Length: 91
Picture 1 (cartoon, rainbow, N blue to C red):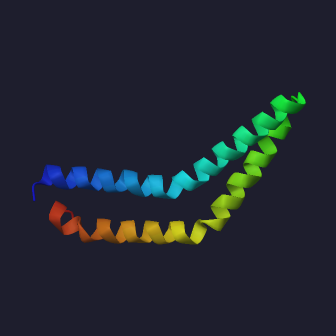
Picture 2: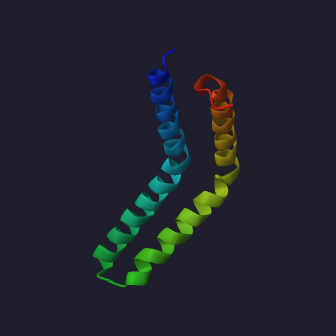
Picture 3: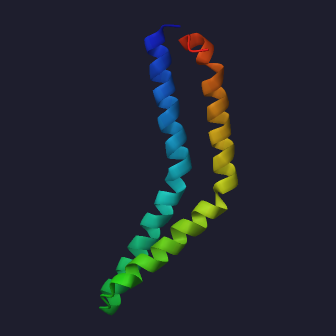
């Protein structure tokens, strides 16, 4: 396999791994932010901490909930990277 194709595959794998790890956390933050904004618009409550605190707790909770699976994904990615070091000539 050509070195350019290996680098492209490595970059694609990196982006997919980053999306797999960060996607659910970002989606929860987005969903909670929209719900809080909708609540603020319906009740005319314009408190800044009301929009920040629930989003912060939701993102922290989802991060803690998905910590073990995310570390497994990162471990698998690291194994794939270290297996490819010989083909790059870096070992």
